[in-house]
Length: 255
Image 1 (spheres, helix red, strand yellow):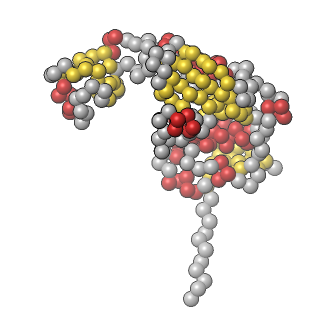
Image 2 (cartoon, rainbow, N blue to C red):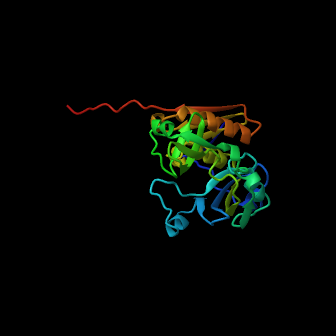
Image 3 (spheres, rainbow, N blue to C red):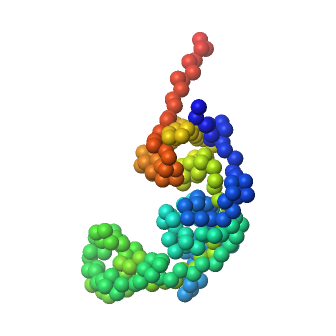
């Protein structure tokens, strides 16, 4: 008989002591908060904490501020940062410095190019310093207006820069059900996890999806990603199934 979790019977969050795992290890599924800065100027370029965003004047109404789910060793974050999570406990914070070669890479002077002004304008971009432009598969930022030509830097924005992370481990996930619901939420953030039901047996996981997810653009690709994540988390599983149920509309009995 499959174990049922989710909306009807969601697995409780296990503590580290209950599950026996007291620290983060390679392969752990964890929630972390972080604030990321560039070392040379101290500017924040990414963060997960709403209070810090508001304090620093970086708050954006449509952005989602919540701990980030990380599968340690899966490269959902910079590998150099994920490595530093190993051995940390729930509630522990750490300051991590990551050099350019382990972050966005070293700046390549060959990626700074002169582009005809007309070509930039043709892309619908204002020919001004600081504007971003896409040419073919390359994205860059205009660094200088040289008249008939624009100097465009196609290096990644953080190339050549040392990054600083203040990271805190908020939770280590242990139960299979909570791990599955966490990866579902990561791929489809618009719906809370209590809208799903997870049925689990030894070799098959069945996820009952809210019918409203059918209206989300690209949901089929999200399901492919969820299935891949779930199968990677548990090597004994052979299948992941998704079910959407449509009820017969209630008949109008009034005359």
